[in-house]
Image 1: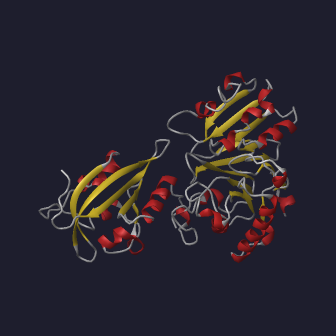
Image 2 (image 1 turned 90 degrees about the horizontal axis):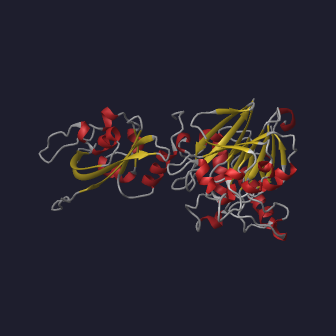
Image 3 (image 1 turned 90 degrees about the vertical axis):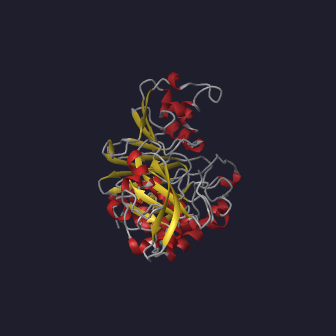
Length: 138
Length: 288
């Protein structure tokens, strides 16, 4: 166990992600991956409990991500990293490679978690698969 | 550290013949430290009786508000010492983005809801956001932390020497999760309550009542017991009784609580129901 009590905003975000079937990813104020839900695990290939907490250098690269041409997307262009570093919501369409080697096209929306009193607590991303023939919104 | 309950009821005052023994006044707990310093946890309607009985020689009281729902502040303008010119009143509470603590409380202590305005109070009153770091009141160390409830809500831990009181009267830590296997750092209020000499905790609902109240910000019995078990509280006091719960209901509720506590390995003498006017001496010699 990490001795530090998680801030309430992260606890509530995790509880929300645990309760929904939309894939979601949660990162704390230190940019560390602290949770993703079972719906995300179905796309990423492993449950969070098998992967564990990861620093930004690992979680931002271990699943790809790639653009439509198959080129790696720079870390600072990833929606979750934008939310973390620039404190604003962000959206992207991209491809990830699961830990089982499967490719998935997904859309991602990320938002920063800012406490009532203004403290930055981390960021939350939800994503969903795009199936062949589906178009991303303009 | 001495503790006295002046109101153990939740939501709304519920006076009447059905609630005579447990009491109908809303949340208010008096904490008296070893040097006489007085801290009051919440200002529900119970604070009225506290104020009426307070010696006029007491010069100062610090009130720690968990949140600003009416059952936690309704007694403020009936707190008699606030009408004494030489009385010092310090009020701490949760910060919120839209207005200061004073301005938010003034929505209640102002027309048309009140005949008195805060600025008319004769005492010296100050309002302060509870800080994110620990601070001292008299010989005690105070810690506040946000907990799961509706709106900005704090729990408090008061520590003097080896004695610690944790007060979380409105809390739904199992909302969207289960507490039995959750990692401790992910449990709302865990660090605040860990190993407390006495944990005063929300237990508004019986298990069968909870399904109609999920997300209302309060705990059912099973979750309160599991929370207390996980934080390894030395003593547990069930608090914030539902206004519909009569004395007879709460007697039976206590029996169910003791059974559940024992099933978790708890000592049946270490769990009790909050009762208005109940006094608990937590000083080590008295508590032993």
